[in-house]
Length: 155
Image 1 (cartoon, one colour):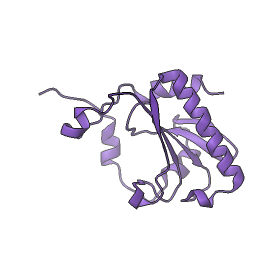
Image 2 (cartoon, one colour):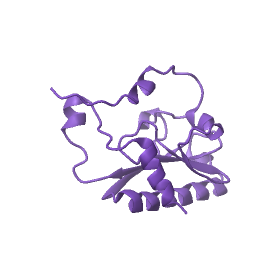
Image 3 (tube, rainbow, N blue to C red):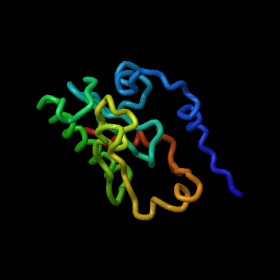
Image 4 (cartoon, helix red, strand yellow):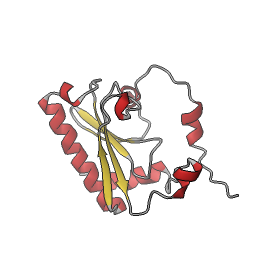
């Protein structure tokens, strides 16, 4: 049997699950995963992505639903999403995207209390036997390399 090494996943698996919101914490830290910062929102690389290039856009304000956003926040969130989509298209040449918000835990939100928009690049055939048989996702590039490439193509 072949081994697939993904040692960065251990940080996610073994870290203490505290009450801090990762989006509120990320705004204050200079961990290098933030792509853009606006007046009302920011974009960030997903540290534990479904696939390479998985990014998120979130408001600075700790709100849980799109209906909680004011017009300026909503507008900036969508503009930032457009910028990230364009940068990923130029950088990674995906054949499609999954994007959107999981509103509430029943909808699949892992962090239901702080609204965030997922932007996930997709390629034909990128879902294969690994997640089905081995419960493993293969991430083809280290996150900081992907981040640097996307940043190069942001306005």
